[in-house]
Each structure stands twice: as C-alpha cells, then as structure tokens.
Image 1 (spheres, rainbow, N blue to C red):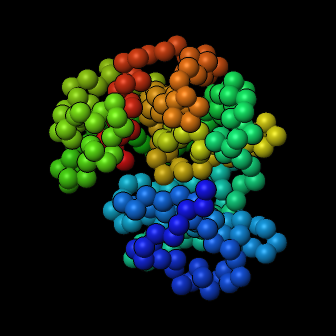
Image 2: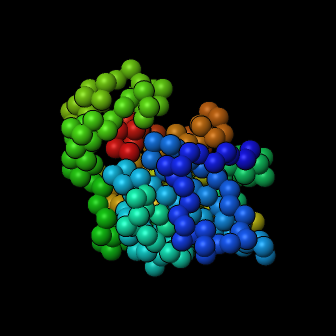
Image 3: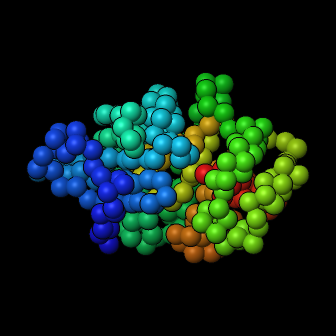
Length: 267
C-alpha cells in the first residue's frame, strides 16, 4: 500500500530535492509524532532512504548515526551517505541493502523457516563483543531514562503502550519497572528494536539490520522479549517457543513481561 505524503512538518529538505532531481520519492513509513522514512529511487532503480526524526525524540538521528557507524565494523548495516543534524528536523540518507525484510509475503509464506532465520540473525547480532561496544542500555541507564521521560511528560500510555499495558498510568508503569527490576542481567550487544521488519534477507541469507537507534549493551531479554512480541504482531501467535528454542533459550515469562513494558516506556 502506498502511503500518502504527510503534512509540511516533514517536508523534504531542499538540499535533498536538489541532489535527487528526477528521483522518485515515496513514503514507506511514518509516525507523525516523531519520524518519517522515504525511499528515493533513481532512474536506474538504485534506492536510498531518507529518514527524518524530530529533535528531542528518542532515538534521534544522532543516536542512530553513531550506532550505525560503529556497528559497520561488526554487522551488515546500511552505509550512511549524508547526515544533517542542524536542520529543523535532523535527517540522514542511507544506501539500500538489497534484500527483503521479514514481512515480505515470500518470507511469511514459510513462517517456520522465517522464524528460524530470525533467531539465527539475532544470534549473529549477539556475537558482537560487549567490551567493544560504547553504547550502554543496562537497566541502570534504562531506568534513569524512563524517569526522565516520565518527568518530561513524554510517556503517553494510550499512544505509546501496546494493549497489554494500556491499563497502566505512566507513573505506575515506571514504578513497576523500578520495583520489579531483575536481579541479574545477561549482557550482550542488543539491537534494541529487533522486530520482523528490521531484519533483511536475500535468498535465505541474512543481508542486514536496520533501525539501530537503540543499539547498546543490555540484557539479552531486551531483544528476546521484543523479538517474540514482534513475531506475534507479524505472524500471529504460536512461534515464541520455536524462536527461543532456535536461539537457545527457554521461556522466561517474567523477563519477557518486564522488558516488553520497558520497551513501551523508553521510546
């Protein structure tokens, strides 16, 4: 489905238009609260992506650029072609990674195979050495971030929370996260938003990772909880056990619930 251009808040920067005259420009994703992504297609069918994120939103363009540049030494991520952090709405342009994301009908036609591919992709991501990663989202940092968002009035349960948590107030959600904090963290370099559309494949092989603005060292369940949640959103129920088995973990219901609530609170 082709998305309509949103209002002028996310107008395409003049510099981008000048440098891409004759290119087809199409909105592929947006959230009018904070961000938009457009695909830029040249006459010879090469693709780039323009991502714009409002200042003050989390994660911002500056967060993603830093993480992508660092991750490029370890993982397949899109090359960054241009960045502008000084505009009213910061933006970056990345080169396309040739591949299909996990929501493509051809991949979803064989959900068992796709789930195994996604679990293997996450295992690959988590092989990045923790001691090399300068980005931190351990619980101490995550909970401090949640308090700041609460204090700033940035948590809107009816907007940001999934149905499982919409009965909670912002204050109550943050209280739960602090009071029920797990006593142990199994640290890995997490993607931070390991959802089905953010993983790219080609001919059954992993091709790349996108949307890396929340990459950082954190408990492995930060990714596992979100990954299994995303399977339900995109494939339906019934794939959580298979994913965790393929990854090499058993279900931990408490950590899954905890990190899913954290996911809704912090971004």
